[in-house]
Image (cartoon, rainbow, N blue to C red; front, top):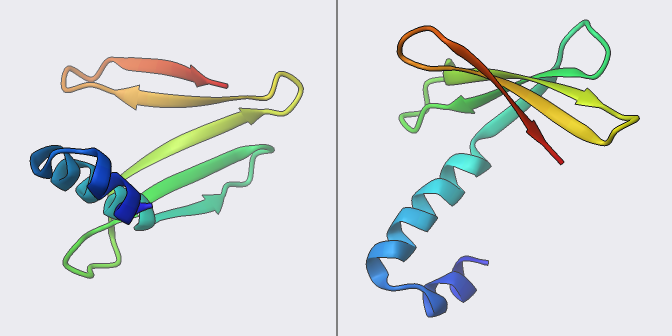
Length: 83
């Protein structure tokens, strides 16, 4: 995928894409005790096993959607639905 992207994007755009791709490869998922609820963490680039950030994802298998709670700098929580 990275080879194909390198041929399509400018070098600057490709570097940004590659950085995000590498972060996605460092993502770890673990199920929580609630049904259809998972914690998604991204491992630090320096090898530290603690996560940079953790997001809680709730799946709704009937509607085939996932919900992610995101907190902004003011402490406000937004819920984002994804198909």
